[in-house]
Length: 331
Length: 252
Image 1 (cartoon, one colour):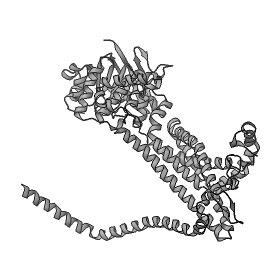
Image 2 (spheres, rainbow over the protein chains, first blue to last red):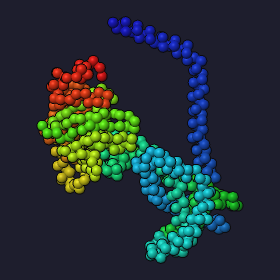
Image 3 (cartoon, one colour):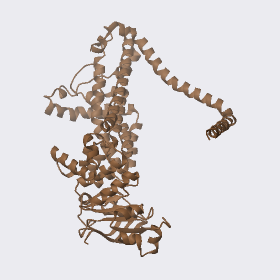
Image 4 (cartoon, each protein chain N blue to C red):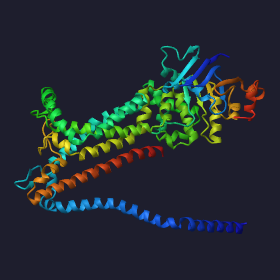
């Protein structure tokens, strides 16, 4: 019996071998080439990233050795005195992006809910394509609109009103310039709405019908079904969408540069101009004369890269803890 | 026997498709009625019209009358939400809320129209889980996720969630089709007990199950109600040839 099995086993093995030899022999070289080719291209992406980090670090060495940790804490930025501190740019980037996310998230999630849960399917698709069209507008157009239309409007109507009524708060202190942190935040918020909306929509569409039905059969109204079944199911996906929006906001250059005022200062007032990391790089790169100035800009680029990586890692951890929390809750 | 739910000349259309055709049927209170028939005969469609689930499907249209205690549930000014709180539903595949704990799943529906104190919630959770014979299995891990339960436990959790709302009628849409035989047996025992307090309507394509758990049985074919009556009679001495062919396994 056992012997027979063995023989049978042997037979199948040989037949498999011959099968592999006859059929796969010419394909094997192709497979090998294909595998090496994909590996080469995949690794080259990693290589480009590493090369970039290495190159940027090398170029920023003069600044790193000259200022050390003071580069991160200093707020003087003076090309003539060759005194460089990046804190105002770090501050401007982080604050503008975070505020933009706070503004854009409810807007985007509400839009995604409207598209998927409230309006009929066809109207929903139409709205979705319109929102996605927003993402196709070049950022310089946003900037142009921001500086020519939105900033003057802010200066004339919104900001004076805020100063009159809430001027006692540190956030609305000072003279209304129009171009300001506020303008930067608003333009960023508009720019990241499409990406957060589009991803949230995908996430919500992926919520199984059975989840909605479960809630409705318990006597949930439409809103209650969204609250107890749809949103909790899509929670981590929506979180991912928000983080992607944050990543986009922090790296956005052109539109922000045009409306934020480009003044390296740290102010808690939304009315005062600010400066972001991408903006200072874009503005000053062509005009550097001193080597240390170029190095300082390179170092800002390095910090920007680090911040972006940090955000992505944080996002992973956050999503991971949410999903793990669910599973751990299960254990 | 007085009818808890009655269908009078009830039809369901999906666009141009006539899925349920002029059905007349009474569901007696405190008993189990099984609806059997081959796949696609319209039995689930019929069941879903009783708690107005078709309201979610834009192309669906229900005509005729469906009454609960003599009142038309599709009548003007009737709130479908309150109908669904009186007529609960258990689905084919267990569908607990994955982001909620076992405890929160049980009170998810109840919390919708009641503000709960903690102690009250705990009471409802315990009594509902005891009713579905799940309490002893989960009492030490009420805070853990519902997704960690087995399929059969999840289905009993869904039944607990449904009865926590204190409905009068419970609709079950092939509640055991995704479960193994032992879990199926537990659900069937539970159905027996539920009829003391609720009116149960169960759709099944498992004829043995219908024979085991139901007091009356209705046989549907191609959207029409072929025959209905006491389960014993339907399974031993059916009047229609079609019914006999189906229960003896000649088609379906």
